Length: 50
Image (cartoon, rainbow, N blue to C red; front, top):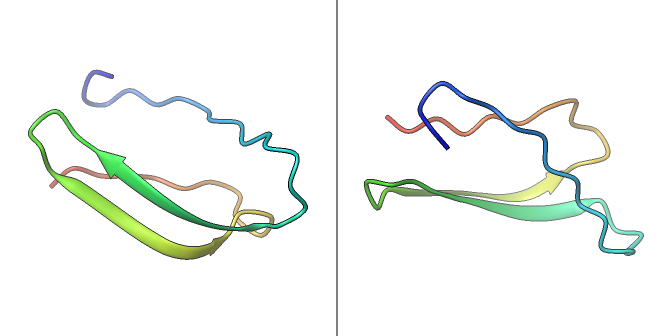
């Protein structure tokens, strides 16, 4: 995805859990992770490549 763009991601794994760990991988090999996110309570989540 080009810088400055955004997309929606639907997690439809059929599980009843709302807690997930998320990892973002970028073209410059930078990776970021966030653990224990309650996706049910989040309205949105943004990854930023610094």
